[in-house]
Image 1 (cartoon, helix red, strand yellow):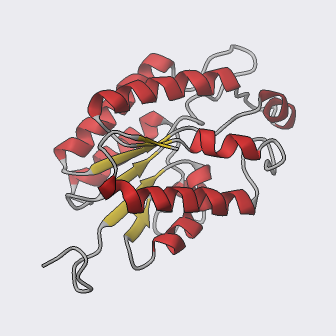
Image 2: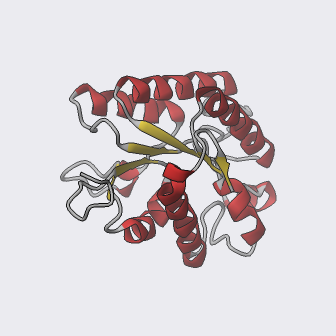
Image 3: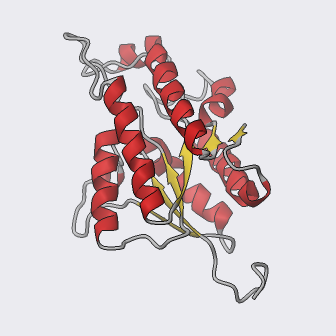
Length: 218
């Protein structure tokens, strides 16, 4: 049966990401309707905590994916749209210690890709969105983030994804020209930017079959 047949099963996409992905997620699901089946990490049953849908840092994403795959929770061939980094670069204002150190971040991303490969998933990486530290750290005193760390952690992910021929969606470069006007707080974006991000990602997913494997999409 042809993949274009109206009776062919839809390809599936599963999203694991931070609050940025939660916010563009409803629009992404809308734009992929009738073309992809859509699901993501969600709040645990009975929970009222919206952070339950948040993938968190790379160690948390790693643990979640290990647990999810232990029971065969994602079908082989599913596109795994994955992002983590904003939580990893959270920095203690007193000690300067990051939540997840760069070398640990590198290790966690390697394990994530190993897990995906072992389960027949098709990973797609989303780069960390921009941080303007003068805005972020003035509006959030409990922890800091720095633009230089975004660059370091994005570079680590770029290297790993290139070595594994994993497609990369450069949401960082896409979003940067829309800032700082598009911030609504220390790190999150206006509804219009969320719509634009979702459209950009949807277009990428729809075109992946025609793109060279491992290509960085801008």
